[in-house]
Length: 87
Image (cartoon, rainbow, N blue to C red; front, side):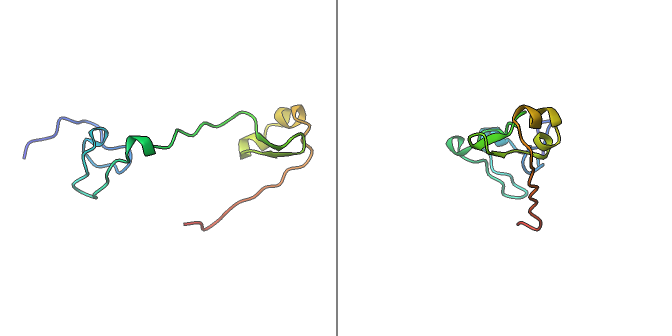
């Protein structure tokens, strides 16, 4: 068996197969998702999302730890929620 031309492993399963060409991994069976089912890349915002205008915001730890953001949006209270043991 000759060595594959591909230098980098698949970004999803870590094995060597032509994922971008739709090839199924021979080691673990990973198959690429359909092009229309691919989720957009996650983009972290510098500001939290406004859920209720001027009252309730949803953001990340980074948003909550930046005092200038909190002052700009007039946020006075923070509720920290952490989910542990999710599958």
